[in-house]
Length: 249
Image (cartoon, rainbow, N blue to C red; front, top):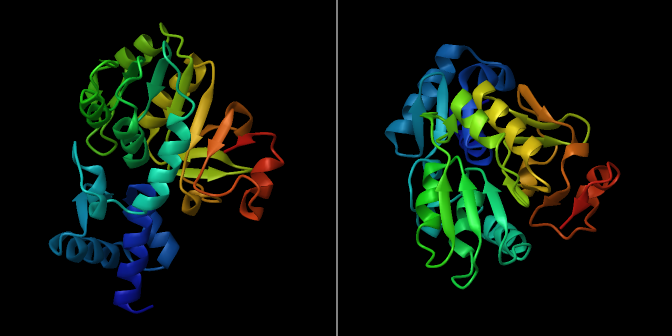
């Protein structure tokens, strides 16, 4: 595989999953770790990714605010966000995780809507603060440098004390058989606690994440109430998920 093609595929993996690991890329492309490190170094120097220890992050995942042109698959994420926002009603307690799709949900919340948001994501919290009548509660703790969310025992303890009406959950991997997966153990523990606390769990994911599996399991599809993608709910691409019993939007 030529270097240019490998760079293109690495960039796609970073943009889809927000974070990639050197070990995973080594296996995926059947090249040495040194080769992947050089690839990531070159992509970082050209401003296309953010290099971190052991891997890389999407550039669109690293700030509190953004422009449409900086977000991978912005049109798809905007459509997902509009579907998700339609589920909100006055008086709700809403738990929302991090990620660029959930950041778009936060941006699109109608200014007249009166809800209380709980979030472990500092960037999502900053966006939610722009809304005039909704309240925002940031569940703080140790911040993960790669995932950009609060993690650790203090966060888990706080999540165990709340009962949100709805949870908007992001994911790095989703597969009808393997379920919801992530690459970061601390993030997995937080997401498990979010699912456990919530009355209804809504998973928001672009279609490019479908049928992808990361290293660590968060939950089975049976623990997700609603899967929101940019696709028509009757799309053939969603057949295997429809067969799990999860609702589609």
